[in-house]
Length: 112
Length: 112
Image (cartoon, rainbow over all chains, first blue to last red; front, side, top):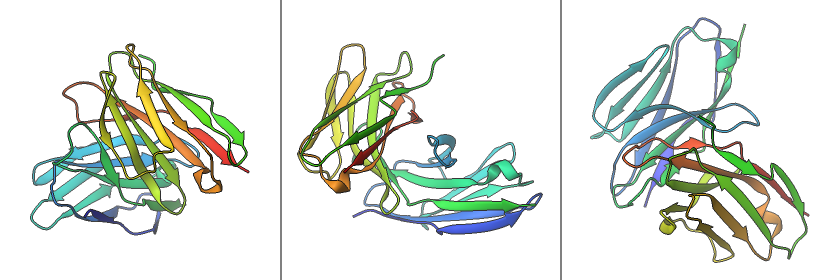
């Protein structure tokens, strides 16, 4: 089966750094995605990891360890607008196409 | 380039009715995936279409069906609506050879 776990909620203050963890179990792995979703809006793509290591994109970085079934999303210099739900999603190698299995999301609240 | 569009944005139906939702992908994208999002279950994969063929299917009952047209536009249909079908239905498109899915704003369905 497939299982993706991430914390339900996190809080942080403006200017801080926050790390959102995601662990996954899948019988086949073919990439991990992070999406950001503001309340009432569509998810927007943040990052994609298929090989081990760190991918950096501005204030956001994503890390993957395939052997540990583990990823994290690192947000630096937090801003109020970063308050949102962060979704971890895994693509199953068995699946043709682009079907993603999503975690339930981590709601991040950034305060001043 | 215009993003993914979905119609209608909001819909109210009663139990037993059926509903059809529409999705127009980003121009040039041939893959369209559908997801159901609820507070309790998060984002769950329904099905994916590519070149008018269903390429993947999630674990949803047969009441949920879809199709894709030659212009890549897609529709999903839910028959014999149940209260539990109340959810945000999201459509995502991706281009051939790309791993990234781009989401539309969703259709919020309320079943009374």
